[in-house]
Length: 178
Image (cartoon, rainbow, N blue to C red; front, top):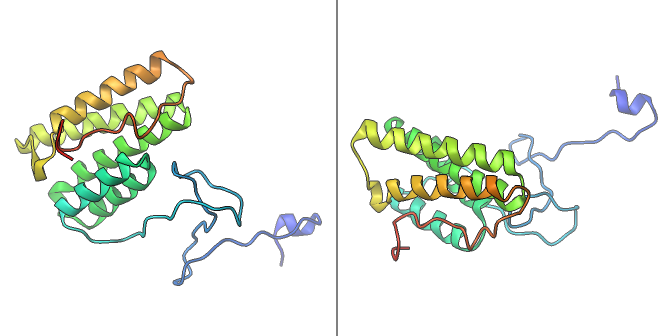
């Protein structure tokens, strides 16, 4: 029994799979995570499922943000969100949303960028208020919330103009602290 595409004379597309048989897109990606044609030179992808200490997560994510790779930084935050303690998952998820918001803003996607920057800012702010923590792992959460809301306002005002991801990257630990 074939797929609908095969019955109409179109080739059947097979999905890329990882070594465990899970569907994975093996197409190369650019620095903002956009798929490139097969065979094109892309940016090395972040390995998935890496367990890092929180401080390693912050350092690696900052390096990727500084390099203009917020999509890749989001993957680092996502690993922390999925592998970290339950009471920190909302924090890491909010940080991942901020990185994806910057990714969308850098791609020129106003709606997605603004929505995720504001959603991530709200999640980080809520987590900090509930936990009474303003600087977990040295991160300046109030500064990140302000950065995200300011960038969302800028993206909304300059609708359609892609931002420079490296130039607009946040400082996770505040000004002057990489």
